[in-house]
Length: 195
Image 1 (cartoon, rainbow, N blue to C red):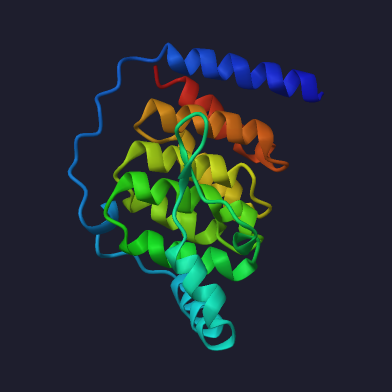
Image 2 (image 1 turned 30 degrees about the vertical axis):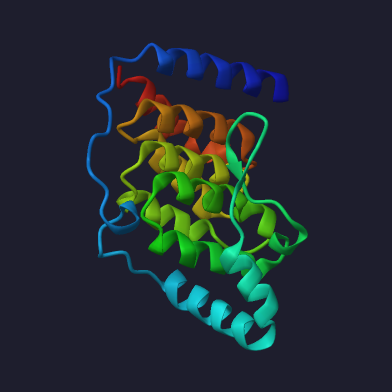
């Protein structure tokens, strides 16, 4: 069954690559690449988690607030360090994401979220709507493929309907990787009819 799922993911990827040409996302990003109307219950939660971390472990908060992505051998920025393996790191990284203007600086913050062990899926699903950079949205969908909640599947389905081919491709791969990915099958079939 797992082998069949991998074949399906590859077939979907090949089919999606063959889709009609996609126009590059040329929208100019505002602050953080997002509109000013981002609001959700998750913001209250992360504000509390950040405040608790500042009060209870100011050294860890400063470390997480200042840590930057380092280039990997493939040239991608990746946040490393034992400090990021703390559930409150997700809240700090999401807070930093909201204030970051450059897409290249938002990418490592999103990529690090699953390694924190914190809660991030609800925030990512909402932020996908306002993120203008397709590389960041693709990273968001990839991160949701590692998620454990129904919100992750909701975000994967949202990614399957994205206008950017790289986001849809990553969503197809994430659907195959996620334990609840079967719930995205109808959206996956609909995205294949897009070409």
